[in-house]
Amino acid sequence: MTSNKLTIGIADMKMAQREGELITYALGSCVGVCLYDPVIKLGALVHVMLPINMETGRTSPLKYADTGIRETLRRMELQGAKRSRIVAKMAGGARMFDTPGCGSLGNIGQRNIESAHMTLKRENIRLVKEDVGGTVARTMLFDVATGVGRIRSYNRPEQIL
Amino acid sequence: MKNYNELNSMELDTLREIGSMGTGNAATALSGMIGRRVRIEMPEVRIMGYNEAIDWIGGPEIITAGVLARMEGEINGIILCIEQAAFVEQVLTCVLGRSFQSFDDLEEMDISALREVGNIMISAYTNAMSGLTNMKIRPSVPAFAVDMQGAIMAVPMAEFGGQSDCIMAIGTNFIFDDDRTVPCRLLMSPDVRSLNFLLRKLGVLDD
Image (tube, rainbow over all chains, first blue to last red; front, top):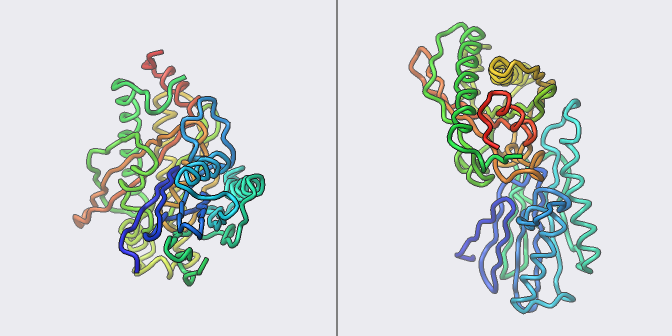
């Protein structure tokens, strides 16, 4: 088992190499994207909240799926990761409140998923596995030594990612 | 246009005043609904970053119930009433005479009671806001969910996440007549434009 755990908050990203576990708690409509270079065992987990960065100053790139994924890739490459080897796993994008009368609230999760998909495609990153959508919150764990992810939810058995 | 993290102490005090009045209204309404005396502790009104707010409420993975409504009218935004286990237990005991073990066992009847109590709480705050400002604010039909509180809290955060990195949280304790103390937590998020409108209307906006 790995000993060191790194917790990733909202609009946050952390990396670990060779060993360690990356955790992000309670992804609702937010999306967690794990990017992993299996050759050098470098893993990163980014927790994004919104689909597309339209901020003028761009002060918090990690809050958005598009700039969050790109910024993570950039920082991984600085650590020696090769773009052609990086694979992705993602989770989240749920609809937490399922009732009419709440307008666009329910769609943020879906828009986050679509934006993450599109960004990964544009950056030529292969998405190997995902657990997205639905109405359930997810805690995402990623073991950097093995590249295996796990998803913990309320009232649902643990999923391997 | 001022953002949440740019408010001065007078502007913050004004928001605290709305929070205090809302909490007072909420205690009165709750007391009427359950037919028992309910007192409140001095409410705390805080402007926090997302992760700080989730820690403040007790951590992301704890299972909780949330009642969410939109504010519409002259002020737009979202209010989320977080109904944690201790609060749910007290409400179900007082309103329905039912015991509460776990969120897994909630039945339709329990959910509609919790939704209604959440609706009453939310209306107490929107009434305080419209009473002070003389503006029309309508809360929408409330939505209800049970899940990890981090994910539930992220809903109002995401709604205005493009405008602000902070959220306004109100916390107090309700003290029931049997001396049980139950925490009450709300996230109140007028959008940034409405926040400025509100503060200007109350004559405290320094811009």
